[in-house]
Length: 462
Image (cartoon, rainbow, N blue to C red; front, side, top):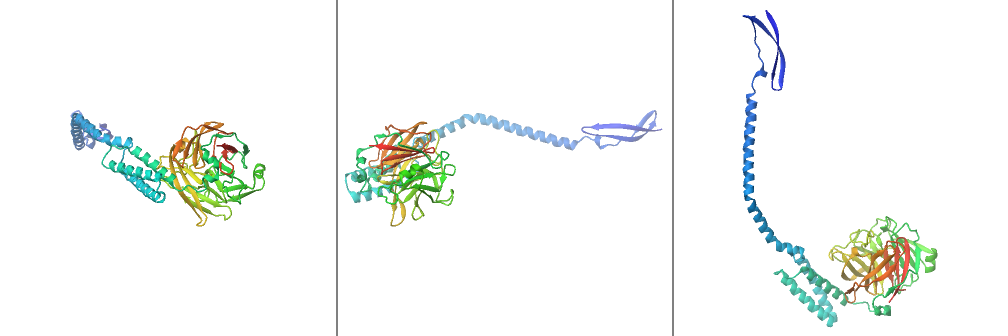
């Protein structure tokens, strides 16, 4: 008798049902079943076993390495401590301002240039001051030579001495012959007092445009623009501009009539456009900071063309690198163009002078039609710690924020002597919080402020 027997065979995860035939034999059911699922996976087992043994070996090796590392840890720590001890002198040199090979090379190049300038000055003047300067430069050269074999001389001290000697050399150079003749009040020393605002007026385009500059024509001997007043408003983001408005007289300026608009660049992003709230109308030209560059531009109102010169220094700040600041910074106020009795100036900062204020005298060569830089001085006053600055009789004055309605002139640097005074406390009133620009005019001794859309003027007293 044939029976159908259903067997369910299972092994591991592989299971299936089989239908097989069987027969009764001696009272028992006998059937033949053949299935691969019943075979023990010897090959797979051996492979897994081999992997386990391998892992155990690797784990044992790792444990041995960890034990060895722990045992060697005191030795490693000793090596680290030894290397650190050897590095300490170099770290001291780095953090304390002592020399490195690179800084020493740069210092030597600056000193070589200074030596050449002093030799030339001494050959031209040959006075007590140039003799003293020559001796001091020679002494500084000796110190620099010592630094090549010794770590006993502080680099910061030597750099400060070099800055002082460079300023002294610049001060020895030719001061304009008519410098003292431009106004006897220059002989009276620093500004003694500044009046309350004597002019208060909203800018021609309203208070919306908070950045720009304005004033009276600043060239003492100018004929064509002798009585002109001007306003330069930054129209693009309170950062860039390309137009100038000139009024023929003070009366026209106050009543906003009889003005002429000039366009000195084709767009706000043209290379001849102005960047930052600083400009000055000097003679027949507007001087200002050129768009996204380390250049000063000169726009000739008659010829309608622009000339430019690059400011000297390592890493001249522009594009909001070294703006004027107080609690807030005035955007892109990196380069400030000013005028005084001695001529034209650019006030800015450089990476080479650690972000501190630098002043360069500008000269226009009317015959060659070129704008040049004649002299440069470096100060120790950080530009971002200053809200604004201006020049009077060759003296740099810097201001700081007091409160929403007051500024204070707190610092002066005399280019004639190289001396500074940080004890000033001259109050300067205002009607709004921010100061976009501040400039002095030698024709009437007045100071002009562009005060967040307001145009203010003050009288300086000596």
